[in-house]
Image 1 (spheres, rainbow, N blue to C red):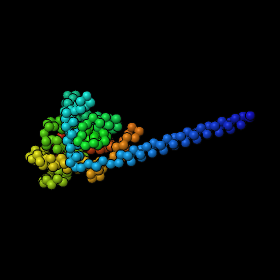
Image 2 (image 1 turned 180 degrees about the vertical axis):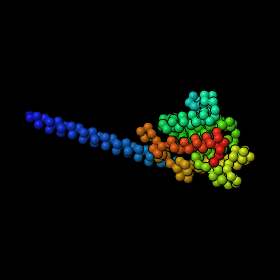
Image 3 (image 1 turned 90 degrees about the vertical axis):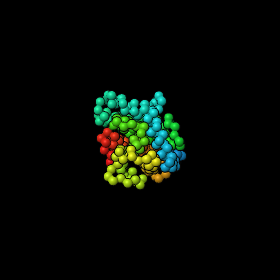
Image 4 (image 1 turned 180 degrees about the horizontal axis):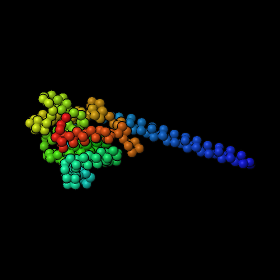
Length: 255
């Protein structure tokens, strides 16, 4: 066999190998895509009412204040650690926010809590984790700002921050007349029944945040290759909530 024949055979063999590898990669990609599609189809949608979402918020807030045994400290204890380490509330809050956002960008951190929460209705661990982690972050910032996180008006303001939109606009949509902007003093004057009404309104807004009215769209939280489709706990969304909570509880500026 000539040198030219050897070279030709080697080249053909290499080409066949590349072709098989490419074919295998394509098949693997197609298989993964089909599995994701099947997972999404099997999951479908979870229908939640406004009242159920409000109950979920209450449970997540309670878990944030009390912590999850052997897994997560209470929001107050966590906040106090940052205050002890960094001194001023402003500096402690900024460092805390930076660390929380960095952690929330990883799916492992996000999905690690949902299965440990006892909720009134069954929802995917990814969704409950998102709510819990963001709720705990807001509650910790409230504590850093000198507020008693066990007070009803503080809890309501924490919920309002969680929506990620204007606090004043959300309150106005409950039918409460607001002359200019919402203040903590105004919230303290509201009866418990009105604060409960605001909390339920936040529950409704949370439903529309995750999906359409009355439906949580689970396509956004299906685990794929260690990430979350649609980034259920995305950097931008968490940053918006953190900034709103920082302004409300640390700077005492409610929008």
